Length: 565
Image 1: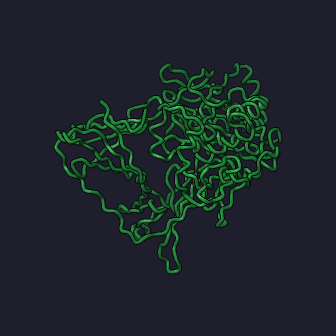
Image 2: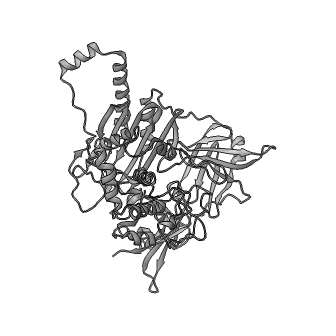
Image 3: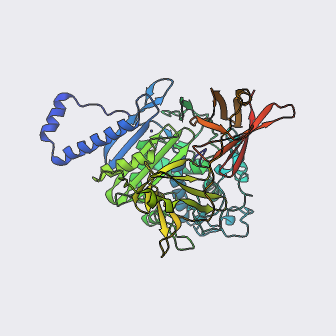
């Protein structure tokens, strides 16, 4: 769950007294020394990842039931200067989804629902547009139901407490993105509907169900449904990163992430949760294995996603994971079942670097004795890169443009940032700091016909090459500073989400709440564009010539922000 990309961190271990430490060192077995070496390597990684004067993370790493590392890094509260400790409580964001999935499996084992039941059996009247949408479609993000967190109108509702019916009304009449089972498309809306089905079948609220049926039986004392009003012991505040430092995260009513992302927890409780999944305290292992099996689409392609978990690998070892992003927080959990290894990273900052998933990946690799090594780029000549350039079609309104600048290659997705890609081989490339790989597909004659993108999770995305010309760089014009000054001000795109426009000499800048400041380039008197992402800003005047609002055009969406006095 992420508020802007979709619905979104441990106490230092006390040192042994010197005499005891020396005594233990004298009798330590080689495995014990190795474990200490692994813990030290993890601590070094985390210390380098999280500065002591910034928001950080709570981290736990467990293997074979023994805690290798349990520690906090960075600050829990910037205003009070309180350091993060490992028993502190963080928002989980979409890590919530695995709890929702297990709740559904519990009800299935009790015979109260079946995974192939159509959702209209429990939500009569829900518009399915003539399609049969099953509970399993919701669990696997293959329902085609549009995610409400991608709707521009949702941004304006963050501060409102919504009933479940009002929340569902946000998206229920939206046209489907795909036919059920045809394609994987992440949908927070699907997990909202799962929460509604849990309530309908169990006769309890979602919050009561997960508390009484999961958290209390497992002794998860610090895990609960989020609330902005209640006093919750050891809860940390969340922050958003800007170019000028950190801001308090924008307010979001916890009625809205609901069963897709409203839970809170600590790394200790998450370790209890993981330990319980090795037995049958909640559901049978057969049910869990089904949840941990990649869903197969109608085409026969696998999605890399089961029920509330993603199926990946860490250095060739089977991994079951999920991440979360929500206002002020980013999270990642990984379990390597054959290695009996678990990693949880809970951060109280909603934007990296570092990304909790990247940190967790490296910690897991250390835990299994196979340290992660960054890919090494190879150098390709301009003549090898030029045939790869072009426009690749991702969907009806989305594309990826590959461009070359000398001996460097760049990729830019519609509405996204222009980023350099680095060669692993002649037709295979990577983005630094991520697991995403781009490979170019050639026909028998050696001509590039498509591009295949594979992220750490989810199905591979194949984009056919088009004959469209590469977009021409926009022309920057010179504007009188007096004209630019008319646009300076604050514009409210949504409650708590503001775009600030500023002028610094001959340059114009925009900065949205929780985001870095970016430069704007004029292409007409009222129209500006960004170079770091594919986006435009247009200022609107009234009949008297006063600037009253702006419209942000990005990713096929138009979001209007009124000028604030």
